[in-house]
Image (cartoon, rainbow, N blue to C red):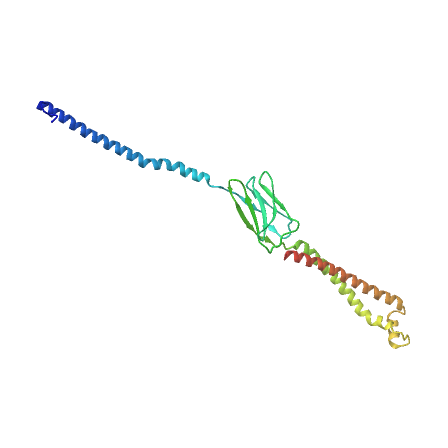
Length: 237
């Protein structure tokens, strides 16, 4: 053996020293293993924060889109959107027109004719690095009260005039008919002539004038009624 001829004291001392070194070595190895294990567990946590932050930062930003109320009398759509966005109008799912967007984010879409309150409408907003946005909106019915009410007042006034003239014509009709009798010796003609003040031509001229006035008034009323109907149709468009 390697320990032959070695004094017992030295052998004991040497063995004790080697034993101590061995024990200390194991302690050191355990500490190293513990340290490495701790670092290994900490590494995923250490690197997880930047990955999470990167994921959050890569999420697209949100666009903002605001549409002013639209009714079926307007020929333009207005609102505001995130600056630098592209805004498009879709009607019943089909592309209709692109908006003019100002530098401050305000936009306008000029229409050739008002939109019907019956239909489906959407505005889309898009911008690089932003999540696309689609907003639906409704077209309300404009009542046209300010346009219809004055016209209805005119119709009422014309109707009163027409009623008065029709009353006069009704009173004069039998006399006017009597004056058309070819037999000037008949009792009907003589009675009509007396009522006409012995001036049949003037009487008939007055009667015909009132008839024409009634026709003119009726035509005016018809035209105004057409305008009223037009506004009512627009309201229901």
